[in-house]
Length: 301
Image 1 (cartoon, one colour):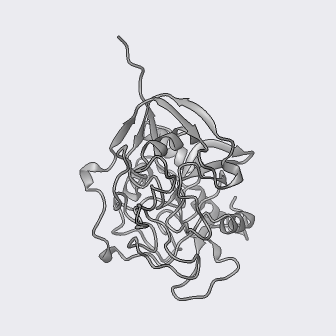
Image 2: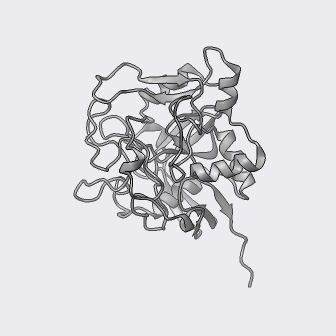
Image 3: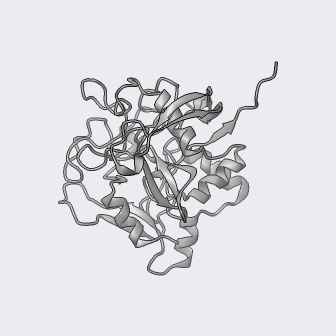
């Protein structure tokens, strides 16, 4: 069940939401169709989890070794999720919630009309906000096949992953891959901004939530692959949408990684590999998606 408390947690802890998105006609970027669904092999190795922590939940720092695995090069798209639903008849938690009704029905939508002043809590639970209708019943994903699917709970993401022959990555795997991919290993924010402060990922530029310069070209989510791949060959590990992992954060919640398309310097500095965010397992939002991992069989001599 979606909880109003979760909405306030998202706002106050800066799991950054959305503004008026760029229209389909404005978008000319993204991965070509043959590249959708490709995986990148992540070699095993050691790294420091929680390196350069900013928020208390990112500590302690730990030296860990990670076994090889494969990670989808991009976030799961609307088109990929639609194929899953078509094949299985799967109904998401947000769709079930809308059908049930009541004061806690719906999925989370960030409602801050362009030019409006900041409000205490611009988040709304919108019955009928689903992966197919991201801002409510009158909306659509027509023309947005390559955008990351949103309004999916951890259970929804895990169900897709299983159908697709994979699984959700663990938090450690996700952070290891993102750390390996940093343009500058010594600068934890280099996955979001280059040395000149130019955005290289989809985040919020300006003062959240009152001014967004959209220097990255987007006010909302972007199609997968609009920004350059990291050093490992992965797209949008930082920014665009938060990503579910299969790692429990606490009872009833899982860990999100990567930040979202509107994390800002003044309010949400979670566009770093070490950043982590708890979220109710059955919760869904307009700025939470996922990607999937696959095991790599051990090599034999």
